[in-house]
Length: 274
Ligand SMILES: NC(=O)c1ccc[n+]([C@@H]2O[C@H](COP(=O)([O-])OP(=O)(O)OC[C@H]3O[C@@H](n4cnc5c(N)ncnc54)[C@H](O)[C@@H]3O)[C@@H](O)[C@H]2O)c1
Image (cartoon, rainbow, N blue to C red; front, side):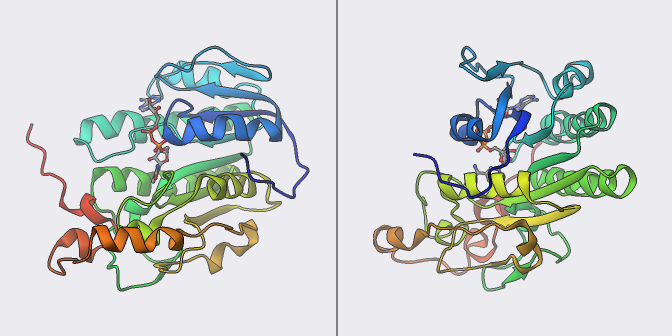
């Protein structure tokens, strides 16, 4: 079931990158309600185009393919890229070169709004006993988090220099349900993901706005006050999963870096040897 969003805004053509991924598969049927045509892209198999869909595979590091991808598009939900901690060279192609290609293509084709799937790993080295807002200095917890921090800076630059608007969504943990106690704070339900992406696509003025992507959880590390103009109102909460998760994980080792920092286990990944 898709969440109901109050805006009646409909785009002509929306582009969804990473459409074959975990979140792309969720957003594919949901975003159709907000556009005449949904263009889907990935390097993984996307199946055949359904009604109102266009399938256009592209590797993000392939500049010509990405430039063709942005042609005729009104707005972009950019979810494509490497979504886990990996050696730098892997991250570099998809998340850094690839993101540059997306923004240059947007500039050339006059695309004015991008929703960028950033990540909590941009701020992963803040502690779990801190509540941070959207303006704190970044503290990436690996090459993946660094690439998302680059993406947020790139978005800021393309807004300041070229007037392309971006909402950088620092997604927490978007899965069917929270998998561990950390995710009681970081969980983003799929319905709230839809609410957030649609709000970010349709809010009248966003400039470059950073927003944390989490549901209305009881345990809170992130303060979205600075992004209230986006109009995102989460309606789900991880609380209903708490008892089962605490029973499964009754004790937390307070010396474990993954239990100390907001980025969880990502803070312990690496080093990667060449
Ligand atoms: N799921 C979460 O909880 C979460 C949390 C934080 C951030 N994010 C971000 O949200 C986005 C979607 O996350 P997801 O969980 O669906 O990840 P995912 O890994 O399931 O999907 C990413 C998609 O990008 C595609 N991709 C990878 N490299 C590519 C390339 N070089 N060119 C074109 N396509 C490429 C993959 O094939 C994949 O289908 C990602 O950008 C991720 O970093 C997700």
